[in-house]
Amino acid sequence: MDVFFKHLNNSIKVTTLMISSMLIELQDMFKEDWAFELYQKLSKMFASCLSQHDMDFMDDPNEVEYIYCTRWGHLKKNCPEYLQQLKDV
Image 1 (cartoon, rainbow, N blue to C red):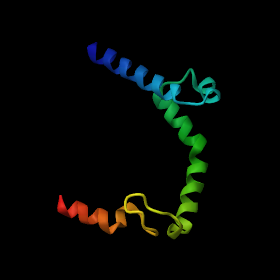
Image 2: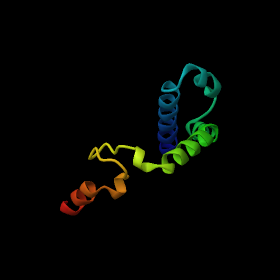
Image 3: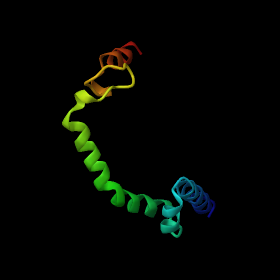
Image 4: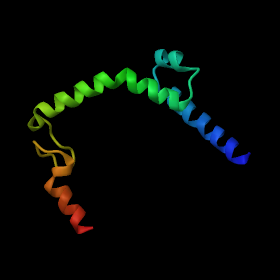
């Protein structure tokens, strides 16, 4: 029974954190949902936005400045400085 209450308590904390970080309009829409339901509904709601953003980004990665080394035209997984740092560790 203790495991159940621990899980329930954690679920309440996560749900509260998720809802408190939302805009008020979204809080009203999702006030009856638990964390997993929130995740599912928000994923569906914003899936088209994220997909379009990802496609826009991948159209021309040379227009994006990478924050780690401030060079243009590559992602973190291809950054020479980042890869060297991984080898050194």
